[in-house]
Length: 72
Image (cartoon, rainbow, N blue to C red; front, side, top):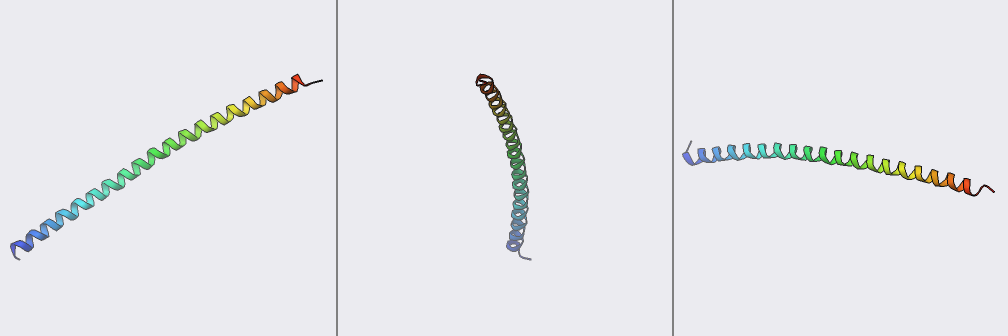
């Protein structure tokens, strides 16, 4: 096997190995980012639920106060 052909084979193997390694790192990075986005989404949903509960409670209190005030 000529030296130039052997050099190209070695370069090809090294390049493919690096690309495989970078692809694995990319997939891991995407999975980590997705997990962080899902955690943020859950926190936002909890906050929205809490605010909705507070608003409903405030509405019930105002409704009860109106009933007491307009009890003619």
